[in-house]
Image 1 (cartoon, rainbow, N blue to C red):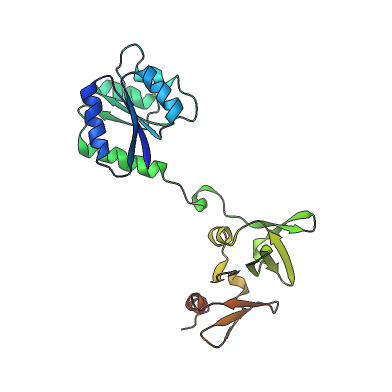
Image 2: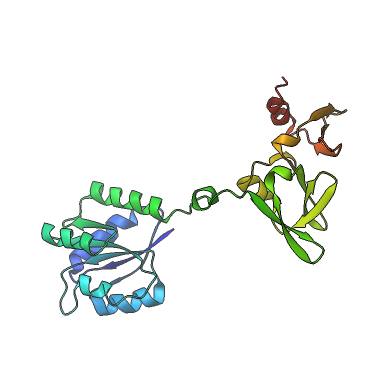
Length: 235
């Protein structure tokens, strides 16, 4: 849900905007304010994601209100009857602006932009893919190069990374390893490195196991067998 506060000294304009926003299923109206002082208190207490803010208000304008807010700021969408104020709004780093009377199609575009802006970003978009993973060796932390890892698995003791015949404990989860590294899911409790797919041994009941270059056996469940076979060029 996108949590919204509407601030406007004109009751009709305020209610009209609230009415339009209420039509969107993912918008939650936290409240409304008739002036900047009321708005300041509600922003500090309720911490909205977005404030639809009238620019021209008595005593303290919408522009002046922005200077009174502490970081992190909510997204600010200025609402104005004058184009000149819209230009100034962007100079004040507003997220967007709407001209009164607010047109439904223009508001819809603003809401779409807000949804994209407020949506969580996948980790791959936020961080550089890792090339080394932290593992524990006795009471030390070692950074294990990703290309040296044959497979990963989880058991009651946690998550482990295997390199050759060496087993290392890590605090990373299998889900994080699957999402942030090239390791491939082959079993509910196992991930395997592409370079470790040396041999596939088919077993009974549509099960299989991968033999790594170091001779380790990694189980493959029925669910993930088609993907593993496809990666090896098998039908």
